[in-house]
Image (cartoon, rainbow, N blue to C red; front, top):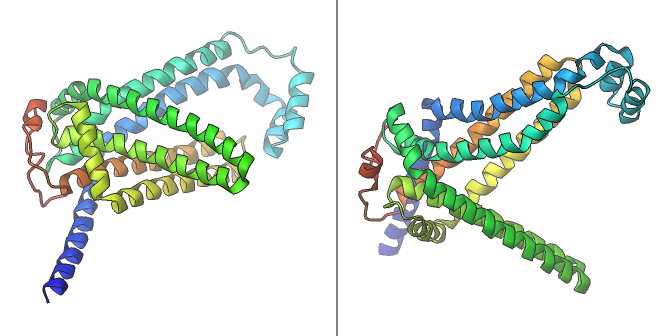
Length: 315
């Protein structure tokens, strides 16, 4: 009987854990501020660069042959029109300027995104949404540690990918399935490293004292203690992203390219959904850190917010 009682207790704890994680996902819907910020962070720079790139091409859209080539999605026809009328239309200085700005804008988006991470995580960790002043304070105080974790994660993944490619090529010389198996294992380890770094971020916000290395140690302990929920989270988020990306491509094939407003609208709806998937993943990571027992520390007060570690019944 004690064994039966213990098994039922395990089932109840598992069910309660899923219910608690669901409350963190619900917070993503009830607290739309981070969703709006993350969407604007990608949409506004992309729209600006898109206008800079597309404005020199605007005269081409008045050519019937050009629009017909777009509608038919014929690359040969498009190149033929461009080569035939290359002397008639000038792109001006905006296209080269936009192309030069792309890497700078990308780097700026990455830095701002890392700065926002602390505020986003604390928004889902607290029982009630923090004020915007607290959001900015947490984002600022965690920026350096999150930047260090990002560099560390990118470095580890780069080394892993390089080693995996070399071992996979070597394995293919021995036996083709061996090279494929090495590539699959290496890719899985790379995704695991990404989950490890993201859990370290959540651990810093929820209960760490600000030491990035201690946060990585704590994140590794969570990975070991809760491998199945983390695996389900990584695979589920990846599957949703693949599905949404495929949907965007399918809609792009169905909507005529000359109907640019409808194309833009469908693309933005998919982008909003992709942002939501990323935020839901962050919320679940915060919940996993909360569900893994450990003595709380005074880091929440150091951030200027409180009660991160206190149990909450609201979503």
